[in-house]
Structure formats: structure tokens, C-alpha cells
Length: 418
View 1 (cartoon, helix red, strand yellow):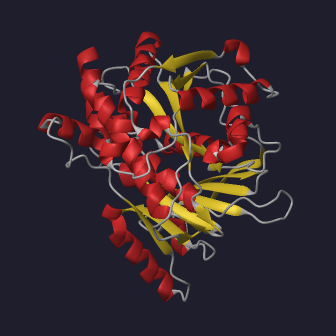
View 2 (cartoon, helix red, strand yellow):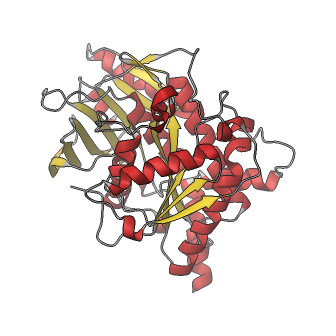
């Protein structure tokens, strides 16, 4: 099943130059704040004018983060964490949110920076070996089936190089929508090396972590926000690399999504999305991040819930031609599939729920199963912002990554409408 719909919301693509050599809150803001801010505000105006949430895909060249069957996890966690933090802060500064009716669904996508490397800088790749994400070739990005109406790039030499190569590759795509694609160059006064240096960043230090063939993540995922998107992105990045098609090896992601029964006592529950809504939104995001487009099978099933046998568990499972299998499983406790499926070998969670990871491994030990390799994702926090960020803005930032606060705002909006 494709996540594409006949009636799609407005969808834009922003092509960013490569990241700064040192990832920090300051360097990411200096490199990208002006650019992202301009595009965000324009997309928000579209959302407001048509009362539909616009989609903004922010595509970023990524250095080589894989070393054999290992990944520079900390680097990716810092890069995506700082980008999503910046996006959240910019939405705060410009009052872009569900309450204002101008929300923008921002997704950070990654593609290989190798197209800018040395003598190959002006050459198109002959073949596309990266047929599945999460980090794809520029060719794969340009030829994917995402139907963008507008592509934005940075009006600097490096940005123009990236844009022209992207457009050439896009033109040769079978599903090209070039007749409808509007191109816009974004001006910036920023002189950050990330915008002017065409050489991709090389990672020289930092511990690597092993990749896994079966990874799990869990959560409520109500009103998907940037904190959820970071958690889901890091889960996909822990997944083992794609193998050649037809080798019979599958890679699997299991997403545990809290069942409706467990959420009956949540605050502002009238604005709580039901399990099916949350599952579809998570699936749409993951398929976009992983560039999953050609499914070989899709089914929805109802199975006994773990070992309790007291409820029926909803499971949505999709197998993709690239060898990825994604299961969305309704969960009724803190453990979910992690204590029902021995083949799961890794768990991705936020640092505030690390106690849950320990509890899962204790349960697996009781069964005689190997412990899960636990990957933590930082909770997005702008408490250490510069002096120009007010306490009110910091509080607003925290509210944007709180599903409870989002529901409260929707409740207030509905009350005002009455």
C-alpha cells in the first residue's frame, strides 16, 4: 500500500546544503535558521489560506555514517535532534501551530552527500544502488514518487549545484511532475561554511553502534510532533542496511502504538486521536522517511494480545519489495511485542523512558532471551538557548512537543468556535 493519496495536501521540498562540520545548537541555527524560517512562513501561509496542513520535506545531504554493519548513532542523533529543535523553535517564533490554523507538517529527510565529492561533483550517478532508505542517493530522492508542487533551494553556489543536479535527475523520472514543479531560490545573508563549502563532512570520531535486523519502538504517538518524528527517524536509522533484492533477508521495524483503552483517562481525551488515526499518521511518516513506495503485501489482522489472551490486538503489517517489513501493533502494557517476539534485538526509546527499557530486558531475562540493545534519543529541549530566547518562547517550545498541550489547544480552539 502506498502512503500517497489522490487528494494530497500541498507538499514542498527544501534542499539544504550539507551540515556544518561541528554539530551544535549554535552551528545549526547559524547555518539554517534564516532559510528554514523563510520557507516555513510561506508554507504556513498556504496552510492557513486553504485550511489544510501543508507538508514540508527538508532534505539534507548526510555524510557517510555507516561503517560496515555499524552506524555513527550519536552523530545522527545530534544532527536530527538539533534540526528538529530548530524547526520547533522557528514555529514557536512565528506562531505556526494547530491552534493558529497554519500548522506545517515538517519532515527531515536524508540523502547521501557523495554526489559532491571530488571529481564526481558534476556527474550524475550511473545507477541507483540505494533503492531504500533511510539515507538514499540524490538520484533516488529526485526520482521518488513524492509529488512536490514546489522545490526550494539556497541561493548560493553550492545550493545551485544541488538544485540543478536534482532537477536533471527529476526530469528523467517516469513519474516526474516537472510541469507542475515550481522552483524557488531562497536568499540568505548567512556566510556559514555549511552553505559555501561544497565538500561533504567526514566523520572522524565518535563511537559507532551495531545495526540491527529487527528494531522496536513504542509510544502513544498522539498528534505526531517533532519529538515523535525524531524517535521514529532514529528507529529507522538503527535498522540494518538494505541488501540486494531477492536475497530473502528481511529487515523489520515493530512500532507499538498504545491502545485506546489505556488512554481513557488522558486529559482532553475528546481531542485524542483513535488508534487507527495514530497508526496511519505514523505509517505515513515512516514510509516517507524510509522512501518506501513499492509494497509487495499489506494486511491488517486481529490477534490475541500477547500472553494475556483477554483482548484482541490490532496489527497492521506491510512488507516492501526492498526487504523491509513494518508492523504497527496495538499495545496494552509497557512491554508490547518486545516480550512476545524473541527476534527483536534492539529498542529505541527517549531518555526519559529508559527505566522502561530496563524493565523490558528484565522480562526477557526471565524468559531466557537475550537483552535488547537499547538506543536512547534525547528529549528535545531548548532550556539552553541564547539570551535572545525569552522564557515565554521556551515554554511555548516545550508545549509544542507535548501531545497533552496540543489537545488542550485544540479544545480551546473548539470552545472559541462555539
